[in-house]
Image 1: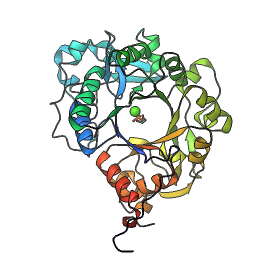
Image 2: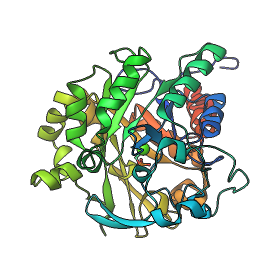
Image 3: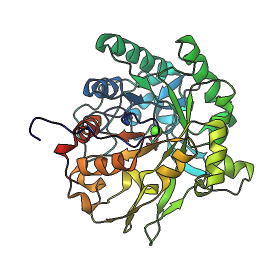
Length: 364
Ligand code: G3P
Ligand code: CA
């Protein structure tokens, strides 16, 4: 009927619309993990911003996706740090470059961030500092006050086993900061994520904030299913299970004992057929979608919410079925009942959510 709008009921665990998590900030537009990338995401309307966390050698948590800062900073252009280039074994893999845990915070602050992906704009390179978690929290507080809406933070403990072995455990420092900013409680706008179950179990003993078990994959099998990865803490402790085992009914029930949700690679929810890289290295544009799995329903049945990653606008990240239209991918996942999406382009994720809410505007 003209003038009437039918509102879509999102099939999420809570019945609320899914949250949009700015993956490393609005990282499709600005160098990832910079205050500018986080601020832009907030201006675009993101519900949460996501800092990945690593530690400096003086124990300060900073926002970086890797300990290896070679690709995302201009450290290679600093001759005074030339002799810090080295090789380390992180999570069983030998990596060469410059590493955050070999620098003090004061030294890190002399570096500037760079765009890692060659097909994204480089125009903001060498401008932005590497932020500390504390600076990210302060930004979020200021922006929440300014905008009158609650913006959340969604930190991830990166390589917790490695950090612990280097004498720089992440969990205690993270909780200390949350405490200092009155964010260490159940209803705080905070969710903490990790690929390592042991990190989350340690956090559960220190905080009531919501925790999220990330679920990784090592690629796509010829039948379109995910080749599961394995939490590195399981490798170290000799636990034979993979992420696929954590997604069984028993595995989900175990996750529920220490976490509130799961954060799976989106291919666990909708597979693709065809080969060619995972996540940021993917080229999905020539792949076809498979049938959606029952993953969301099974997680919801276990009382766990589902925040899927990572959604990106560029055609190379979109299966051919979407015809290069990123909105169509969000609509599929929102209809499946995901409770949140990690997106490099929060504005698109929000536009898709708004359009689906008034579903007359969305084709089936
Ligand atoms: O944390 C969710 C998603 O960000 C996991 O992937 O590698 O981008 O941290 P990554
Ligand atoms: Ca992350």
